[in-house]
Image (cartoon, rainbow, N blue to C red; front, side):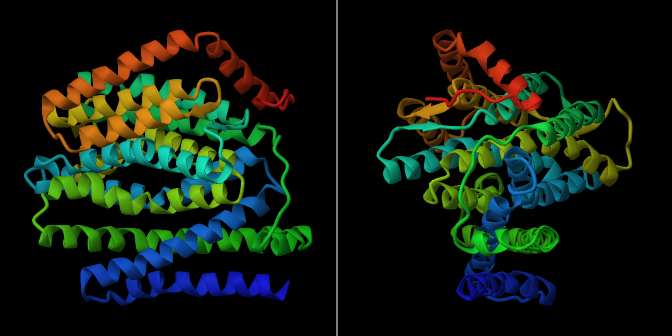
Length: 407
């Protein structure tokens, strides 16, 4: 038992440099700084994983996953909020003229589905030998909300800005998702092992306090480390001559998405791929509702313009990026309609993302967006009988009604 507490203590020590370096504002080689902050993020991801498993003793798995996913995605919120604020405060600045806030948001969302989902699927397949990743029925609730948010967001490119009206709609969706998740049942039982085991054996009050403290510490480490981690990678990229738009769209999100991806892989290696993928799906719900919904608020704070008719501007490129990202999201939701991800869908998610990543032209973005929607339509026809089942599963999850195991 003492050894497991020692592991927790050592992991906390590995997380501390992220906070210390951020407070001390140390300036050195950007790649070295990125490495140091990256180690802290990795430590925080492990702590979050142990906290999640222990938290399931007191709250539903769905709520635990949602909370951990929200903590893990905090860096993305911080980076995008700053970019949106600067867009409002300096209309002629690079953040506004180059649309960096939307670039960062769309890049993060496409990375999550196009890279993280297939990566977790691959880890699962290599570990188990199975090419069919089945998630628990609780994920149906998240998929329903992701579908509704996607239908709403796919129409945003028809307008020239993201406004406070969108904030009300999307933040309301997120609030409803969290409130319903609180009521969700917990159907997956598991045995605590490793550091989670020693935390789980504490009496109720000490256990809850320990989990909350470790979660808070992990959030602080991630919040302190993610931005300088991203900056270190971006500065290194600039030295190599990579354009700032591409760095903000892909490298910075890669850094800010690292905690949740590491957490999902860690859970998958622990034999809990359903929970790991659930964390990624929940992160997507968070980003597709709360993240987008808070961008107009950050822009309004920066610009001082609180009109419901004004908001974060969208030019042609940003409209294309949102359309492509929403189309990818639609395809991802339909791929999971039957609560399982199989090799063809996972491969399609990865290949379509990877190919369009290296062809940054307007016609390509629009073409791939249409391609995603065509595939989405074909899968909808194939899985049409699973559509009502998804809603039935979501409703049963909210009511806490048990259901047969998905096979």
